[in-house]
Image 1 (cartoon, rainbow, N blue to C red):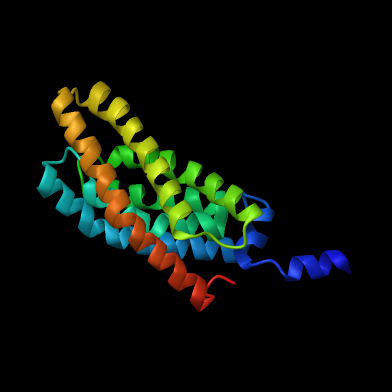
Image 2: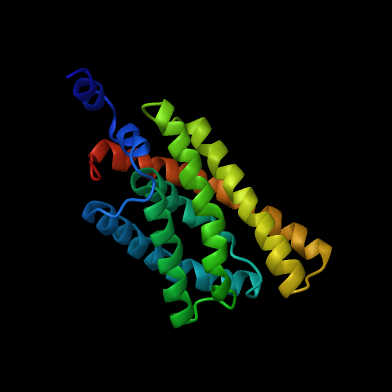
Length: 199
C-alpha cells in the first residue's frame, strides 16, 4: 500500500524517469513518432535556410530548433524517444536532400540526444520537475558535446576546414542553440507539461 501511495504521488516525469529507459509501449512509440514528424517538418525549412546561410558548412538553425523538440522527447520518452527523434529526420533529410551534410545528421543527432536522455533521466529520478537553470545547463553541455564531435569529426577530418572557420561555426551553432533554442525548448516543455499531453 505504501508503495502504491508513493508511486501515485510522483509526477509523470519522475515516474517515467524511474521506469525503463528503453521502452517499447505504444504510447512511447506513437508520442516519439509524433515529435519526430514535427521535428522533421521544422527541419525541412531550417536545413534549407542553413544551407543558404552557411553555404552548406553548418547548421546553426538546426542546432537552435532541435532544442525545441529534443528535450521534450528525451524527458517523456527516454532513450526510445531520443533514438526515434534522432534518426527519423536524417532519413527524410537524406531522401529530400535538404542539406549537403544530411548524411552526418544520424551521428550528430544521437551525439546530443543520447546524453540528453540520460541527463534528464538522472535529474528527474531525484526531482519532481526541472527548472530553467538545470534545463539550460543540460542543453548547453549536450550541444557543446555535439559541436565538439561535429568540429573534430566533420570539420577537421571530412571537410578539412581551417581553424578560423571551425571556431566561427562552433560558437555560432552552440550560442544559437543555448541562447535561442534552450529557452524555446523550455517553454515548449512547460506548455506540454501544463497541458498534460503525455500523461
